[in-house]
Amino acid sequence: MTEIVSEFSIEEKKSRVLRKALSLFLSLGIRAVSMKDISDSMRISKKTLYALFYTKEILLRACIKRLIELQLKEISSIEDMPIPTIEKTFLIYKSSLRNIANQHSSFCYDMKRDYPNIYSFYKALYKDFLNDKIYLMLNESQRNEEIIAGIDLDLFCQINLFRLEEFFSNRDIHQKNHQERILNYAILISLRGILKNPDLIDWK
Image (cartoon, rainbow, N blue to C red; front, side):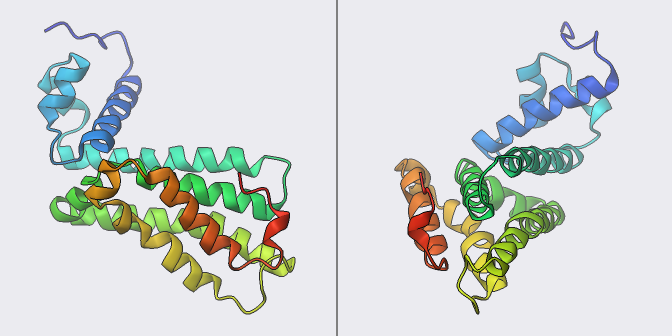
């Protein structure tokens, strides 16, 4: 087999493998994708793949880190937009939920069942970056009196963000192609409900 990535450095090879493996895991589920599937899709030998990532578990952990990094990059671009904090919160909120909805229905289920340590790692990273971004921005909006005083923002995030992964893992949701409509309902109803003046925000 001709190694099409032979001209790249080790780090470049790893980066290319991560991009391909993450794409396959997200679109097909983790259990459905083998190391051979990944090597075949990249036209490299399994020997080369295992030299870069000794096991599928090591590769998956690296993919999860990359997934979080990509989501953080997307969030950072929203943070740089010249709009009010609460609108940034809305866009980050929507972006985060869409990323969950676009995962294959078995992605998190496979991870939780077959790689519980990585699943715990993923949940911790996901919760940390949501706390760092959405939760802190909601707090800022509450201090600016845009959000109703007395709203428990920690509980709000627990209900409306951290548990939605389980909701979007439902196969019926993916099959019916209703993600965008569901996202709008999840965001508009929950986030509008805690604002003092929801009609002042551009919800498009």
